[in-house]
Length: 145
Image (cartoon, rainbow, N blue to C red):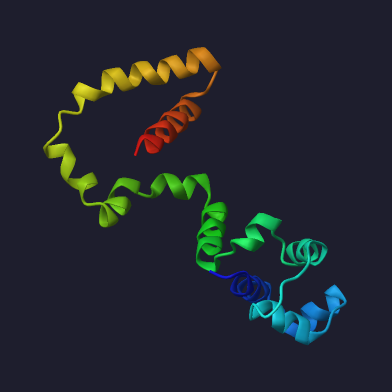
């Protein structure tokens, strides 16, 4: 996605017209339009002001993806209690069928003891909670992929 499209999506997500954004930034509506159509680029100071206006970091503004942002917001708003009700394996298995298939094929017990040892080592070596150790191990495994 281009910077212009990111700016457009961020402005729309914040419910601002080009005129409103321009007024808040002290520029013309045409300037906003040129930025959003990639005709010109905002300078670094204006980019920072755009990020503040749209409630984003500069990095987020540059790579703004409205779909990703909406998913992140839904996750943030979802309570722990609700998250515990979700069968995450079933949900992810819709996208990755192997998650539903492997229990009948793989002897889980062949892997649980070595993985438990790794979790316990992370907890002992770094003082991580059970959940934190699990998340670190999950992240390490994801990096191998």
